[in-house]
Image (cartoon, rainbow, N blue to C red; front, side):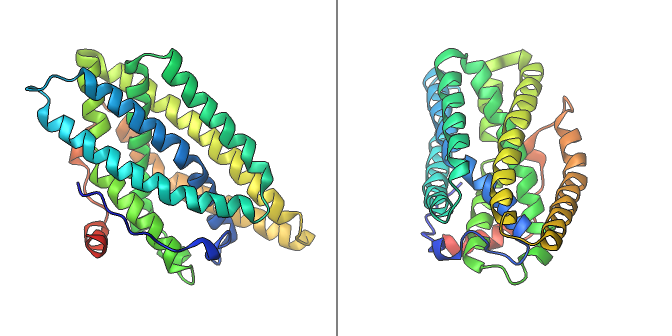
Length: 267
């Protein structure tokens, strides 16, 4: 793992950074969660680090340090991204972010380290799926898109693959022999929690766009959204099913095609 700081200048490309506005806005909704979720991940990992033994978990503790540095770089970039989204006329998304922050504060204050570590691993298992999708299955949607925003997402998701095993190993260390049941609970919680956030926020973004459309444009936009969501669901389903296996191990997942080569630009 290598913490990288690409310092991309992309804010003048937002919000519709690609020709397919529905893809752009659904992706933007994902970004709007990241400063909250990734700061939460870091806080959980640092709490877990304090419980690990120096001799037995020395390597994992070093990996946590690198993980935290990578995620910190991610949420700083996405915080700039999100500020521009809100400034361009989408005030309806602000309450969703506040609620997500409140949820994570409650998790940290009232839930166990086991619970939080399981949620973090659930989120990270979803990140690997998005990495494969963005590197291998949306090239057509990137045609004509702003290359700076494409670079932001590819850098972020390539590093998500790079640190894919850290939360998995932390969760196993915290939970011990009962980690499988705990991992599944965390996975389903993260899936429901963040899917609801993403859908609510993308609905708000698209509703604002469609308020300025003609009826014909609105119908075309709704169809474009439907086709994209169907496309992602069809791609993601086999990966989601693999996560349910007791033999699932993110360390065995192959790298998305082109991810390692892409990261060389920022080393």
